[in-house]
Length: 198
Image (cartoon, rainbow, N blue to C red):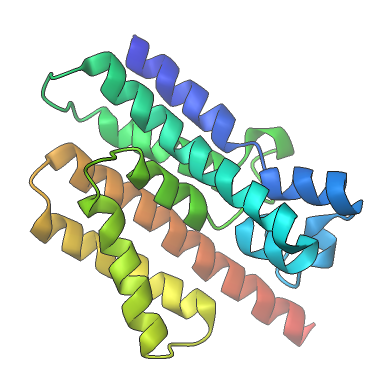
């Protein structure tokens, strides 16, 4: 029962779009209208709102991903990780991508919140290092645009997690969150192409 409340709370917390809130508070701008892709995430918070807006959004997006995982681990102590952990990991990412407060539309691409979820395992950092290494690799290879780099990063992270991690629940959770990130980027690319053609 405790885990169910963490999942529900994680989804509701994930649905809070901090980029939208901080840009409105600090710059009186609508991040969806100001940004080229309408994404209310961390990248656009930096691009449209500047350093303060970006840093606040980044910290809050990381925090809303990490908190449900931290609470789950705290409440379950030394018990073996149950497969419900995968849904705890998924909840804030799904909330950010499909926020309940906006009718499940207009969410972000969920990169920062996904890293937050994986940082929730601190001091166990291997899950967070997997996508970080792929991001660095594809950045060094100058893969463009950023959406393609993100799709490759999180697609490869699924395979790497299945190969490198021992915990089945974390493997499943990484598969879930990576799939959401990839799907959101593919959907965003399609939307951008449609706008350019219209």
